[in-house]
Amino acid sequence: LSLAGSRTKAKPRDLLEKFEGDVMLLWGEKDPWMTPTKADLIMEIRPDAKYIPVLAGHCPQDDAPIEANGALA
Image 1 (cartoon, one colour):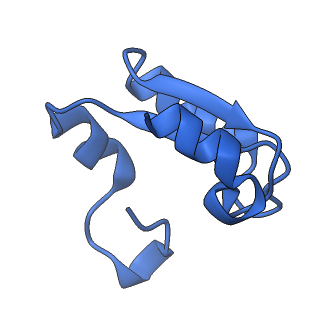
Image 2: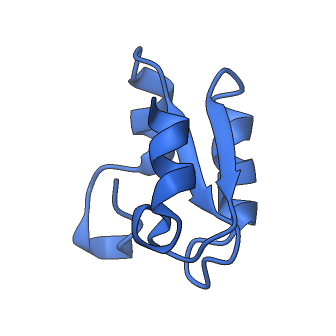
């Protein structure tokens, strides 16, 4: 899912609205690029999504592997 502006024709909102599977947001609370406010926007589109904030940066699986793996289990 890219937010790369004009480089992509697919819009995140359209994709999320059409996607029928489960959605999990494993989100680094200290991510400087994809801040938690972006997760809030996704939750508005998909209120059924499972939101899991992790005390980590942009790559929670690297910054907090125990918490990230625990969330996926």
